[in-house]
Amino acid sequence: MRVIWKLADGREIAAEVAPGLSLMEAAQANNVPGVIGECGGCLSCATCHVVVDPDWADRTGAPGEFEDAMLDITAAERQPRSRLSCQIEAHPDLDGLVLHVPEA
Amino acid sequence: MTVWTPTDDGHADLTSHDAFAGGAPHNTFARLRREDPLHWTEYADGQDFWSVTRHADIAEMNKNTAVFSSARGIRMEDQSYEEYLARRTFQETDPPEHSQTRMKLMKAFSRTTMAQYEDDIRAICVDILDEVLDKGTFDATKEIARQLPMRMLGRIVGLPDADLPWLVEKGDALIANTDPDFTTHVLDKLDTDEYRMMPFNSPAGAELYLYAKDLMEQKEKAGDTSGVLHMILQPSKDGSVISDTEFRNFFCLVVAAGNDTTRYSIAAGIQAMCHQPELLEQMQAGGDIWETAPDEIIRWATPALYFRRTALQDHEMHGKTIRAGDKVLYWWSSANRDETVFDDPFRVDLYRNPNRHLSFGQGGPHVCLGMWLARLEVKVLFQELAKRLSSIEPAGPHKFLRSNFVGGIKELPVTVRRA
Image (cartoon, rainbow over all chains, first blue to last red; front, top):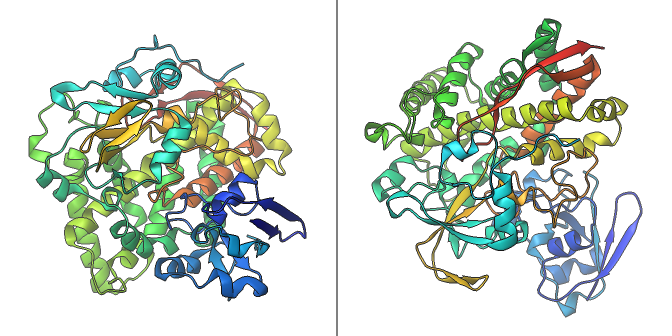
């Protein structure tokens, strides 16, 4: 599947992502600045914050309980479609997904 | 010129504190990464464990908490179940329990919260440096590195300033409990049975216990709700409250963590400046370097040399089987010198980017709670230091802590000239 990260400075990074990988891992593999992922996807750091594009929000779903709490401590302010990208798994249904990386 | 060259013969005994008294035995780690990345390490009285030394292996295992648990202790030494219960902090728990405790603390230590302390940190740095730099020659660990983290911890945790020197002393005894310079009760040389149930097996742990108890009682009476100590005492969403023992152990953890890890990062950075003179010029040039320099200094320092996990089930790796119940050590110190991840790992490159060091235990749920504070303290300290110096050089050999758990330069004589 293909993912597009839109950065705060207007740049875009697009990459093919293997299904099963988390989108935090995918961002790390593609050196997407602003998606750090200090805790490896264990919901301990809130450094892989992304905002899901409005067209995709239904398909990525809502954050779980722990994720919801962690979204309150992100460096960039939380927005209505904020997610921690370690909690979104790459899946063929998400082909073409657009994620916005907020400015920290 | 490299900053420091390891001198061990490649076969150091990783269970010996003395083997680390001249700095971490990096020739041994390099050999293990090359020849035996999952190394069965023999240790007295059948306390043997696996040593994992490659960056890629540690990164993979660290997130696998279903197999590798923190809940049976994080030091190489065995402990009995009752000891473990008496001494454990949230460092010694696994998800989801770990996540629940952490949730209470995350906000107080988040990047955003910490950023609000930048001016405070800068003011403390200016104080410290203005006082010491005119001396010309001094011990940089004692006069600079030791000062900042504890003064900041006082602010953040909500401790009275007057208590800080005493706390620094107790924290030192607590964490450096294998170095005779810091404790009269050297852990591996004395029978510390009396203190087995105390945090870090240390009499200082006992004193900190009592201090924490009194402090909280006073704060409660006064209705003082400042700082993280108050925050951690609040019930979680499901109504559960931290127990007295958990709280007091957490207090000891915070004092120890705030006391030594950032200190030894700062010390290692100053030591690097002494041996790579270009670092001072680079810092003075400023700009983007402050995005990357703190992490490189913290990689170079690696104050937490290892943390241990315990296998909950059999696990195959490198043609060997880690059995359920086996202890497994992640040697962060080795991962941070892994030549397959870091070009020229023994050189300090303040522009290193990406810098996938593991000093904070990145890649797992236990990633350092204080990492944003640590990075900020390191950044501001070196910004203010570089501004004030025209040169810095060693004024004698530096001495490492006698510990295979905490890697740090305990004595760092330097001579400086002010800019």
